[in-house]
Image 1: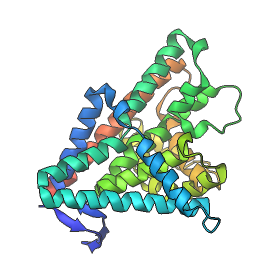
Image 2: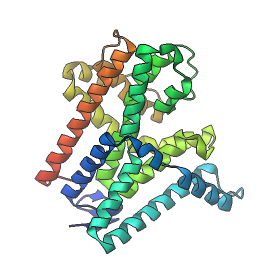
Image 3: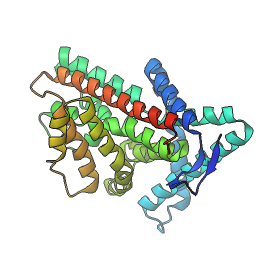
Image 4: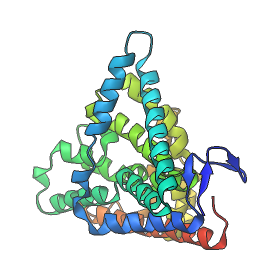
Length: 305
């Protein structure tokens, strides 16, 4: 059964059309399977439509009356409305078409395969050709470090930030998809692209304003993932780290520090950098399996959002 949502139902809020419990679980599993087996998805994830749409929208509104951040938020809302409309039309035509549309939205939003491939490329270069590593490779993997002033130990900094970037590319996407549906997951990814892609040509101030919104969306997934890290590694060590975190006063940075500092407790930083990445890959894979197991359990028991 498919439910039309946009209001409070049974204590939660959703946008657009929401799938039934097991259909939601099925789409997540199918999307991750496709992500795992198909390496060419990157060429289908073109941001051109989003960039062109934003540029057109900005030209229509940018008359001095509206700030850049208001234009960005308005554009994200338009993306949400359009994607909700597409989902609603698909649902009206056929439940199967709606299932496929939701899957496409989720596949566009997820970056699990691309993130894993970038990690694999970095691992190989660290092991066999460390001197050939260019900054653009590191910043592609961890774009939140583009503004870093660090001139040394950049590789070490990237390794620490793999945990946060796994949140951006996988865990928050799945969380938003479950809680609010495919249109909301797509809208989150649009905001993320605005912050970390140079194609939108936003200034630092506007990006920092957008990060304030992303902070609230990432807040729960980051903490859920941190506790999952404790379940798939050394529970006592991870919990001790969580209880002694040193976080920034900046809300967005505090989210990054929360997951990265927790992540530091699950791998051995005395090993070679390539071995550290192998450890992190294994930990993140087990964490994703823990997430999927919990989602499946909630789905089959009916205790589901």
